[in-house]
Length: 341
Image 1 (tube, one colour):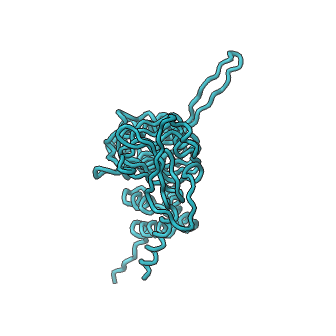
Image 2 (tube, rainbow, N blue to C red):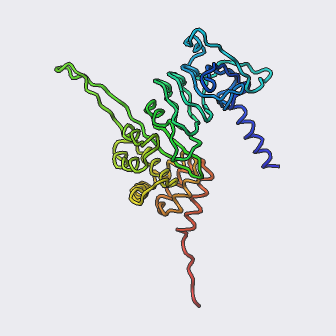
Image 3 (cartoon, helix red, strand yellow):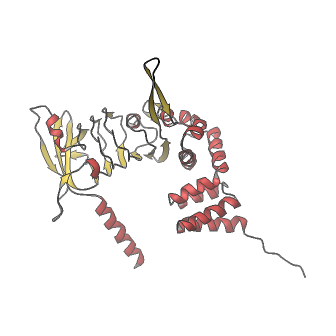
């Protein structure tokens, strides 16, 4: 009975986190529909591939930013409404957007994300998309400081709108690709810009701090350029946050898409030199699989395992602690003395 109980709890959690009674307002555009706004109850919005038989091609300007987006449409535009999922009795439906939005899943075929479409969605954490170099409007993700994860259901070799998305963000972002039987994970570190007035000359000098800006230039034809990306790591070790540099090394080794031997060596060396910090990061993230990876690759030493085990126990990460204790026993358990009589 215990496995059944755990399954039911997880199911209820997902339902509470999702969206009920989704209703989409849209207008017709050439070859499809443009989403004007959404109503419902919840924090996760999944836009279907079609509304009323029309493929979704665009996300209108201000669609998830403000319910007054319709005011910015041409006067003759006909606004239509499509019910995607049935409402739940007793649960009110409101505008889906702004600070209430946590996750958005956009369908394949979206070609345009309009200007300020997600402006001030301050709690938006995850964005899911598919292949295709959709056009990203100015300010589409302005003030989306909580956006830390972008997922593409596409092969890492396919063109996507990732370059445009990253120009809208300055915080650290984790980007995952899943498709074509391959997985790639790219960490784009944080950066920030600063303008300083040179008073005697009456001019402003512009400075960029952090490795994130350089990482955001590592593209060829709307695809991540793995070679260029890996060449940025020496600078990341200096300019990026230590945790970000560790995440870059960890994810490139765990998902070695187009990873050269030289790049593998630099990442492995960095993790070996910072084994305690790497293990601590994985414990904080409650990632026992990551600890297994470090163990299988011989990165953890006796000292780092001991320190990590203490941290896992202190933070009550049971699975992480189990991995560390098993590795400690397998590699460093005292050998039994044998006496010949």
